[in-house]
Image 1 (tube, helix red, strand yellow):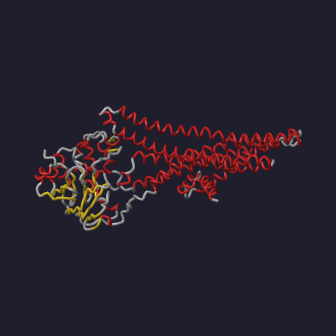
Image 2 (tube, helix red, strand yellow; image 1 turned 90 degrees about the vertical axis):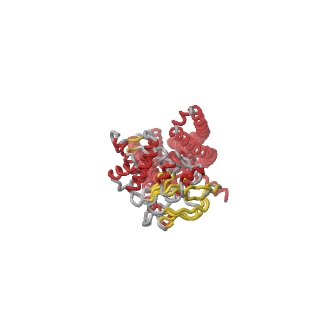
Image 3 (cartoon, rainbow, N blue to C red; image 1 turned 45 degrees about the vertical axis):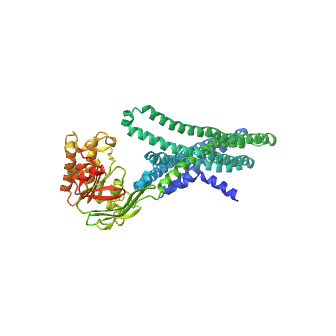
Length: 575
């Protein structure tokens, strides 16, 4: 019994991608039923043509010519009906597969947009891109071919058995003997190629990631004359990728040809048996001709079963990788159903943060009064960014709590929290598009005047005004047409355009001259009333502007009474 169950699992496993796709075709499943009906009509009419031809041969042999013209007309009608039904089947398959891919990609992007930061720290962008493109397309391709090819093939097998049985029960037996053999060969084929498809998926992600890094970092590559080295690394990945595909090509070439061969052997048996009985029993030749033609029509569709298994394994590998994203529990609830505290003072209580096994923050306590401008400094890697990331909950501490206005940030709806807490991270992300689009960043309710005001506060308006198209100027991918200081000021404008209650600047003025930096700080304080600003910086000028400066040392925060004491610790840019 267990062996039979195992066999059944292997057979139904080929259809796993089809079962998976049904979740993304809700409300459109009627199309599948229409495809099944159209495929049945198309197959029944197409396979009936050989039977009509067989009858014509019998009539010619009997020198009965009156029924030939009606038979020819019937063949023409059958051909038209089959063509129309085939069109419905193919169009429905294309339409359904595109709807499926649309819904799946939408869910994938929605899931990715809600993932926590730690999820992206454990997955490369190239790998995630391959999951949302190549893996989705592999499953879409399987669905399309299943609906346009597999269902008609199953219908062909069923109608072939029925028609052959009507012609001669022994003809159907010849055909039925081949079906278990084909299924068995398909299972072996499926098992042998599974590991290759998994490797292809993994290597495609690595290849995408390597290519993305080389394109994004092409200036660094050229600066250090590493072109040959990077080409060799990419070549190694593509060589492995190519070899895996070649291994599958060898398997396909072998198994895809075996299946038609088996059908041909069965057809040969029918010819030998039918020819012998026609000579001995003087039976009509028409049935034999009809049976041979039916076998000819079945040969190509049945050979599709081999390709179906290839597409199935490809799709199953993709589904596995897609489910790793969809089923990953590291998602955030981004609802905005709640109010932000009236006060924007910040308190960190007994904070402990670990990175792996290393404890970088230990029992940290810090109070930031409402409307204050404070600076956090310390040596590289001491945990400054981790501390400020706790405020908008980009990270959560292993122990301790963060409060805004006396309310734990975990009790504030995440959407509400992040609408009122703006953070400018160290890594500035400038998107392809206009300057105004980059400052608005997809948020609603922001006017052109708001954008201009934010740009003035960030001291970037003067530069934008010199451009021919002003705020409608298209900037290049990743903002490569902008200098480092311009990128930083653009990011500051993006953060303050919504007039947040709390603003976090994580070392974002390092490429700006000290005078402009102080002007930006002054503009923020003057124009955004009551705002609480948390600045992360190693600059002496920034610390001097701040009302209070905290230094992170040995995992704890120390309030500096006099920033001149930074010389003792060796921190800060005292130039």
